[in-house]
Image (tube, rainbow, N blue to C red; front, side):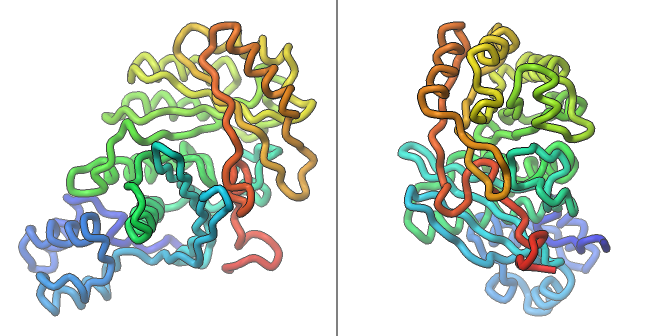
Length: 354
């Protein structure tokens, strides 16, 4: 596949300044453009009234703000909203906006498809097609901010990188987008309000621990025993349970932030009291907290959610063992926007895109 052409959203402030100066315009024009895009939510250069006409025309021709577009927004009965986004090459991704009483959380995608192939998840059913650019990741943030503003709702409070794809398999674009989101000239979004969710790319977890911002880290573990983990999360380049948790402890040590262990409860597969006790033994010690996720069924896959009393029993085992634990309630099922249900529509028979 040919490289995707860069857009303005792919550039940081320094790069945009260089671009502007190469065109013979003063550097301050870059700050004017960034003000329009990130503060005012304006993507059409013809509306940027303080820029010279010929300069606007050149920008529109050579450096569009984005080449992505929203195809539609759908809303579940619980208020969860899912955007279907078409990228420049016709690929389709999904991003989800989750309202809660005290927060508005955005779940963004980082790849077209996923190479990890968790056996209960829709995102990896067709493998991975390509990585998203930083600009394609940022676009998801901007459309969510715009959506909330249009609906007169509270501002976005949290961003979780756990949509389609393994974020740490797209490390360069991930970290670039985090930097732009966090910048005073960019998204002005606090690093402590962002969380990166990974299936366990150990080397990249350690690298992320040494980045300048203290983003949260969530590790999708889903099993305490190595054999079961390898059956559920078969992707190459993913570490062992022991290696992943050791990297998580290092992350906690560097950032001072407790790491979340995500654990999807599957009926009769990983939800026994024995598995709960084994998990408690692995994650004790203060570096981790556990988030139990009720499985969201995916058509064509054989897995089912744990029964409520079994899920509660699993939670109580961890609680009694002194492990901080929460049992998440399902969100967005009505529009296939729940955890594990996001998929790349263009890769399905009869789907959108190329």
